[in-house]
Image (cartoon, rainbow, N blue to C red; front, side, top):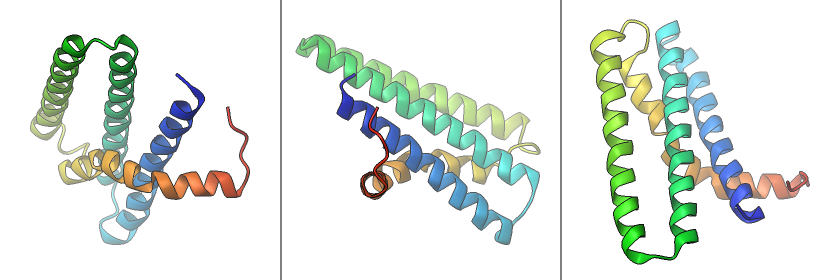
Length: 134
């Protein structure tokens, strides 16, 4: 990965974590409970895994420069990623809903969207405080 890719990946991952932390703070006031926090945490882990696999697929597709491979591989990896996510959510809702609150789990999974929206703000924050670039 080139330096810029690493920075953007780190910033989006930080955005996912910031979103989850904000959701946990908000959950303290709305509905405190272990299952809500566990659901948000599991959702954060799932969104981080989804984002990192998307980044790895994108990097591989750019590296190969083969349009046919890129098309087939990106579609199959995307479909398999969402099928695995759907299976995990279904199992959690069906069997472990007392441990992981289902709504909190879905909100945590939406952290992947919030992380991408928060990336420009986090990038400005990293530049403002002059964090060293890896």
